[in-house]
Amino acid sequence: MRYQKARPLSPKALRGSSVYKTVSSGILLTSFAYFLFTLQDAAVKWLVVALPVWQILFIRSITIFALCAVYGRRPLLVASWR
Image (tube, rainbow, N blue to C red; front, top):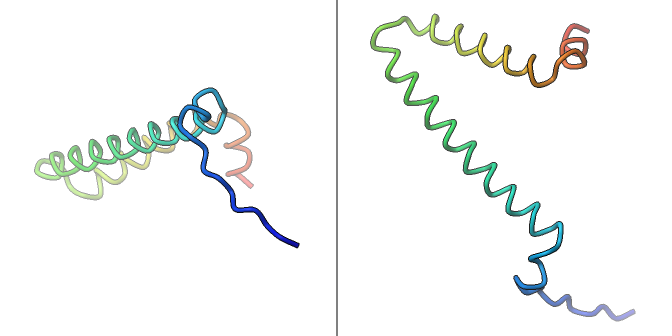
């Protein structure tokens, strides 16, 4: 059995496809995640001057928990309770 070599798709062929939209949204989400990580790291470094480390970590954990609870709502809370 012979296999044919796959030809790469041109950017024009991908423009209207869902693959192009998925790749573009992945790049944007990754860039946004790097931005949020940088923002969080700068905020922690700024706060550590005035607050104890345990307090910063506690506040960060409560914030992450609250955001996850808002995003996941009831199914997330039920699954985490088990």
